[in-house]
Length: 374
Image 1: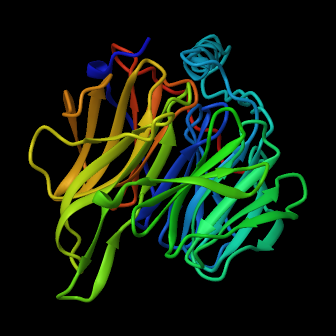
Image 2: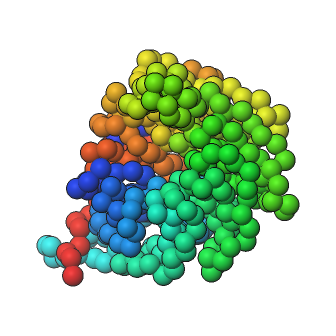
Image 3: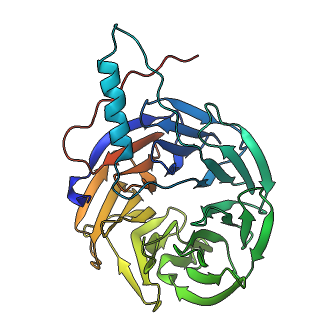
């Protein structure tokens, strides 16, 4: 079981341009990051190799996967890394490089600000687009894959949530009803429902059998209209269900005093999913900015990353509404991703670096030499 206070920086992966988002693949071996140069970069946490995915012509925020998830707390990456490092230590002559083990196969799907979805074979040596779907008019804010891997949900600036077959990219149905840009969406762990949150902080609970939203939840604390700039600011910058499906968390900004500059405070609204009752999680210490990422950890705590007046990662225990632990990130954090096994998390930095943190005590294992480029 992971100890939230044991979290420490394990590794930094660098890119030339600021990062927008980050996600771990289903095995936890790769970290995918999206950048302001319209590219997606794949970092191999075993070898350190960086591989570009080129195909989008605008920024990417939505990223999701179809693949097999490891058991929580399995530590597969650390086990693989120790074996790989040991093999290198036993190599019979200096400088020999053993080929890394092949990753498990998985599909990677990404959505961009032009409204396009792209399918990739995520584990390929050099992934190339294998399917492009014109999915939305305007930005795709987020994508999510159903627990059984058959359905992709996408949402965006055309106020719509759409469901697609992951197998061939065909449209299943469009979920209409939001009155403003839809910022995020997440499947319930039982696969029968989908939650989506829009700019105005309205969370819809969609019945996936009927395509109808059976109820709305109130996350309006995460939105505000600024009369000075005549603009709305808000929406769920992150959304996640707890592993057991009893809670839904929506992260963003509250107490906004300047919409243009994004001046406000980070907050996470956590709903009791059955009752629909909310509570607001806040950092213990004052911080100006936005909560850009949020996750429920299988060990029973939750964590969020924020950016604004610096970068932070906050941790909450159980039902506490005030954070109990905090890490100062090296840079403004623009997203957070929790590894499938719960042994690591990553933040995407505005300086172009992705920072990977581990909950494993002690010094980080040293990765083997990076194989030479072909």
